[in-house]
Length: 395
Ligand code: CAA
Image (cartoon, rainbow, N blue to C red; front, side, top):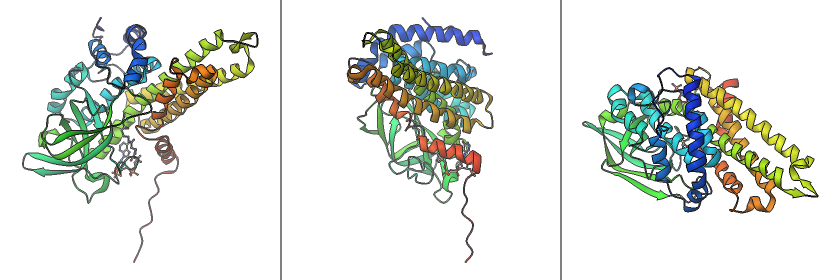
């Protein structure tokens, strides 16, 4: 059942139609697979194919390049819906977005025509390669991967780590230093295809959560990238990376919100049925207060997330701030709410027979990737007090 391509102008009807389809798919196909996806720790190609067949991989991609051309608001609601049942599956949709955004934001018409339709249809899987062993939070200052221009190509050397979907990706947006004397303004962005000579997949990480989403090292050993795959001008790569994160952090906030909502729903149902001291535990004030606090955090996260998504749609000047606010709030909510859900289920919550321990393990990464919660606070604080610039010293 494919989602009929809706009209280009986004309407509430388009969104409602897609969300109805997604809720059915999640109930019938994704939720029953979630525990096994976590247990086996493998990329679920059947679920990826399902998303591709239902046009869910390119929701906000421009319609002229094969996307649905719908809003970021619709996109985050879809990630949220899927993540209620399976965070690894929700991440497939979010990372397709993350990997494609550098091309959408900085690519020229030829690059968009070549890659975006295949990313929208799911023929190509995407990844985004910024992080290195010594360069996580300090993404610009410590980047070591080099790209040197040789004739009609760039030659890339270096390693990237923690790359979500890196081992299964067909196309990777890669950031590398083209001029080491220029700091952030010496970084450039490239599209690398998996079969370019000198590209290799390295170590696959064994992880606490999102176990159905492969995370790996990528190795560039004299990797030859055609110069036509440079995105934008040389030296604009770091700004592209930051603009991408402004639009992708809401996707992670949506994943976090979905995890939190899934855990809250499960805990509330359990509290209605589980009897202790002669009545359902949901009628005991200690549990009621916990559930009420969980609900407040979830709803507050949702309001911030949807506002951030609207800012994405408007490319609003305060998008950077709202993306950080949404990711910070939703990530912390996911961690707190899933931990409390485990507590409400007691010993059952700690068992892999119930989904809330998986949700708690999945929640943790939302406080770490696409900028740690500490980086979100730094970004937020800089909008209030600016970035510190050390005064120039005189000899
Ligand atoms: N939009 C446009 N330009 C931006 C920008 C933004 N949001 N943020 C910064 N810039 C520009 C600045 O204006 C500056 O430009 P000029 O040199 O022309 O003045 C330049 O970029 C450098 O910016 P800063 O001076 O602010 O850079 P900084 O080194 O102080 O730090 C940072 C910036 C916010 C800490 C940044 O490094 C950061 O966000 N770090 C976290 C990295 C991150 O999120 N990594 C996640 C990896 S992806 C991932 O996790 C995906 C996954 O697995 C699913």
